[in-house]
Length: 324
Image (cartoon, rainbow, N blue to C red; front, side, top):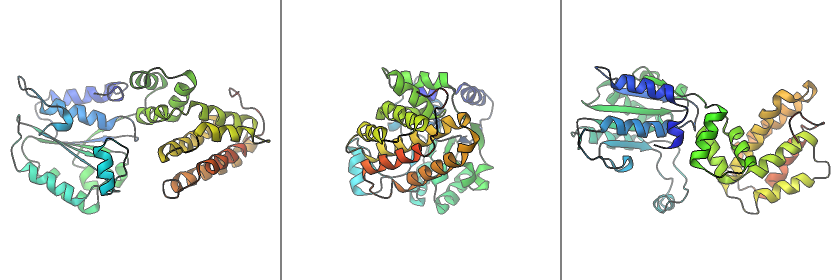
């Protein structure tokens, strides 16, 4: 189990263990909460807990014959190779009906190592419509000893009939202390600026905080805050911002920088004077738009950073408390 799975989710684990110790455990669980909270890691650990048998050696979760995992497949043959080589890869937009049907064919057989089998769907809110309808049949008539763990970021996107057949297990954002502990366990040795930035950008989600910390964008965060606080009339800070992001940042690094810029504005929202609200709202909306477009269009990284810097500077009209 990863640190983000263990830290800050005591209530979820308590509810899970209480259900496990009961006479009849519900067959379908919906793990809900913001993306990046550690729900998938929790599902993996809970599945291992379900299928374990006293005295029976258990293989790793990712190779366990009684733990089935449905998630989005690589988008292309090239992405399959990248995945197999341990490199970042693009995925398809949805979990297909063929994946669900392949899982269902497995369910007609008995579990391999014990009496129980776990099916993890990550994330259930990206099921195709036909996939969701096919899954519903399994939830309505679950095979003996089979338990479903549905990782869900946006419950409203799921069929109501699926939601009604699941026991809901809610995950809440972590506080700064727990988020810091998850960072320290997963990405030890962070400098103070990067750690502070990762906690802010994570907004309670360990996955988001860890991903940001691994990009080493603490200096980027610091420069962004200086631009919002003091402006950038001579564009010197925008130059520093471009230098800090690097000459050829990959798409993940660009997206992390866009997320950081949006959350810099959110972070200072309570400290700005009311006349600055319209500019702040406009800048935030523009950054949201850039975040939607960046994965599609091949933006020049330097120009993107200049645009981000200009949007942040448009909010500035004097120092903000707590920002230097």
